[in-house]
Image (cartoon, rainbow, N blue to C red):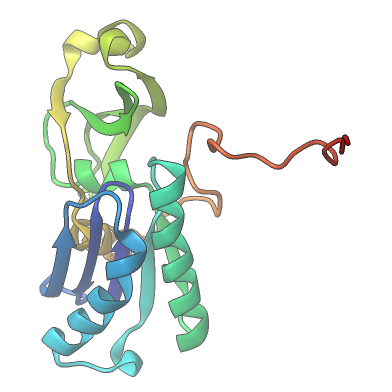
Length: 206
């Protein structure tokens, strides 16, 4: 049974069993209050599912793409929970989860703010039902999406404002069953954070 956490858009937490049944789910579309709600969502899902931490077998972390400030909240929460519970963590590309279940070629586009989109393209699914990513994740302006996506006209656009952690968990269950590689440890920010460390000490003047 997996606990899944994603904060690439709003905040989403879910518990999904090995058969893919959603046992509990908490979602918020608010893109600014990840840290305020994430703990309550985890506790609420455990309570709603009627289980304890020891019933879980893994933690799924949505790795983006997503904005730096929001995305890191979910990843840190997932890693901290997994460490404290002694559970393995399974990193999953968020766009893969959104595309999970799509049969036709699709273009997944999620809000990157600043009039930009994160995008990935998928040619369908493989023989076990896992999404086949053709390109991405990448970042471009909304105005240049069609120009930057290879074979844009070949795909059906899925502009997705929210992400369900339940889909991340269901995808991770199937990936684990078929021994597929999970995402890397690095979050997919795709742009530098707005705040950076200064290259040196500030000069003090009288």
